[in-house]
Image (cartoon, rainbow, N blue to C red; front, side):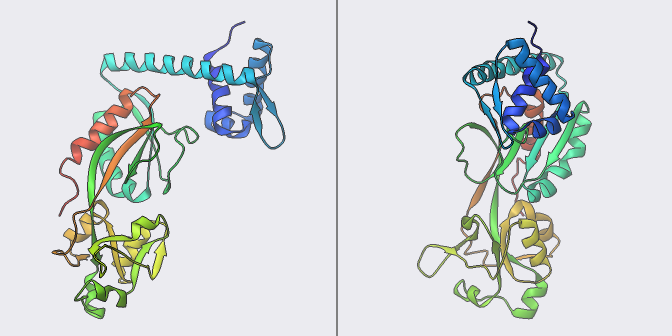
Length: 299
């Protein structure tokens, strides 16, 4: 009986993706090839690892035991490979990075060329998901998350922090006038987020003495959409500095109530699973971000 690493990896991928079809897509194989690999593995073990139905896959008791051990073995092999790479001091291989589209566009994309010049053997795969994703299910090596973290299974490396401020375009202010007080904001169209609701807390003090919570006139799921609306003069917005730094410096957006703005900074972290050894690829990418974002997002 000779079980191969590819067979174990295929089995793990089927479990993580929840289907043979999803696993085949992630592995770059045909569905029939992945199904044959799983059948061959069960034949070698002379046991059923999972029960299949038309709707779902369910691990048997033996499958759960084998899964835990297979994960350890595959992780150990990957860790050994990474150790050899570290000894060569030249990270290489595929690195899957996920970040919300605003951070991807305004922060990561401008740094890709310099990262690739420094680490030409790393093949980047960049994806953008606005919400929190399952790193295992999406086969993501490292994700960039903004704000507080709740998932205790993740390891976080702080990269930077970004302030937030209330902004409007000069065109909007010329047409509708500058709000003279925080209370007067309610007379203006306010641009805000669909979710989470906490993103509609603006760094100003309201009439009740608490942080101002606004009811948006226009809501959007993406900060990029809100940024474009603000640039088009559709209303007043509150966005992270990393998104608006260029527009503010160019004069296309103007800060409102600078003296009354509270110092609110959103932490930015690179996250990956605690049971994943910090590979040289992840370390090289995270360190490159940190080195280029040491001054934060000011201006």
